[in-house]
Length: 171
Ligand SMILES: [Zn+2]
Image 1: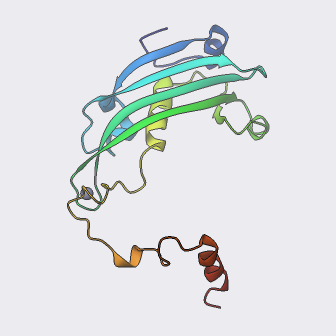
Image 2: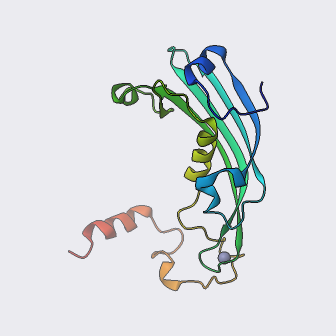
Image 3: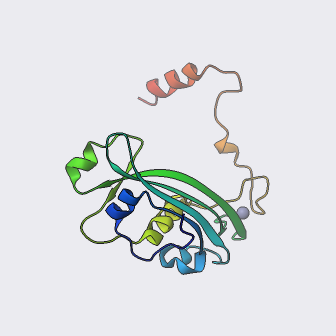
């Protein structure tokens, strides 16, 4: 296991070697993510493990763990967003291959060029960002209960009743 993540990597060679990289990267070193954070202090723990699956595919298990500091869009105060991902990527070299992938894999398009493994870690974090970061209502300084947001139908009502209602709708 290598504690250092190379900046460039031949993915197929890594698959053949069964290479595993684990360590930490500073969040401040991730340019696409950095601008979306309230502050880029701290780091991200990662583990990238290349292997072949039972069908002979080149695959990569990508795990990342980080706590990101975002800005709550309701009260604008700091919000800590915990990210823990465990994603299986399959190396693909074309669209056909990508279409045939089993559902458990996300495609990782690769050509003859080396890949940047740091980008994969950053991608995981970007994908894990909430669209609109907001505190949980009980802790947010600006939360005001919205009576209109309370679902119609009291607790215990049949979900089918709600469904029937929406089907008959306004028409
Ligand atoms: Zn808030």
